[in-house]
Image (cartoon, rainbow, N blue to C red; front, side):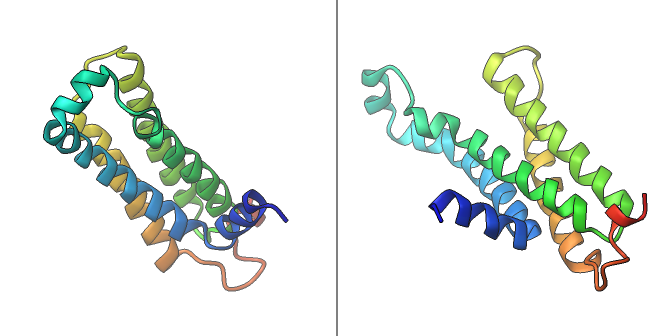
Length: 142
């Protein structure tokens, strides 16, 4: 098995933990970025660009969150939780994409709110919406 297969298997076993961690790390990434570039301003003005990985790290978090939500929505015991997770993910993805392409002027705190709500939904789902039997999951109650 490759590292990617192992990582995907881990995400599918504990999707809410990975989703909550990815969303929280996304918030930390967004909070630290201005301080990092202010403290190292001279270095980055001479390079005239931010490091590629750092500026696109949020998309890695979004991808992990997508995989986690996909799996969580299959195993949650509460159908409303599927919608809460997907809506908060769509909001977060839209805000991050908007930040990259500068389509609309949206306050940055909305990105933080979307990421924190996504982390909160994952934690709630982990704590209160886990299937105890095969018959309880939302995928079986269509």
